[in-house]
Length: 241
Ligand SMILES: [Zn+2]
Image 1: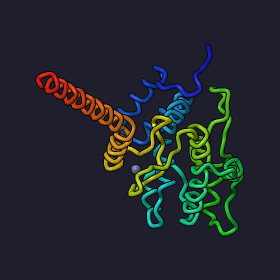
Image 2: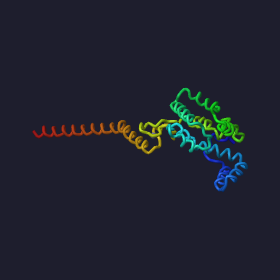
Image 3: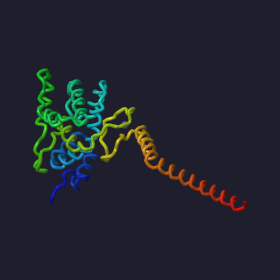
Image 4: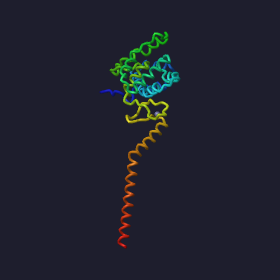
């Protein structure tokens, strides 16, 4: 049987495993379950990281200079890095988002990353224990999958999976303009103000395209009718005389 590239649903075995995890009362029990269900852990972690891709992309691309600690708290599964690294990642991701020709270069540079010379002992140990190599072999799926601890591998996978849907919101006042579209023709993000702006824009475009045409033809019709009745009156007056 062919496996889907990105299955939309979990297999029944992994659904059952997830239910067991939700019922577990202690970390020890969760660890025991995970050790017993290697395939299910792999399927579940891939499934969940795919669901979180739009959020990961959005949060990094829209990252404010003072927003790093919030970002780190949101994505606790990735080892923490120096603040400057996140700002660099944000700038590179924005470049990719804008369709830069350097995109392949940037994506590959993320995969080649090693700890910097200034990294602490803890950072080096964390890097090699959790996030290196960035992609690992999955025998179950017969393919390479992102190492769950590697932020850059998650980003590479997310960019490859969502590249055609990376958009910049056209509402100039948008507070977080980098978004992942649901449809290829979506121009504004899902923020309520931007949606309202999109509706106003649609109304305006519609008016320019259709409404104007309709009013023009109605006006012409009216003028024609007035003209005809004027001629008719004139004719009657001439007959009376
Ligand atoms: Zn927006």
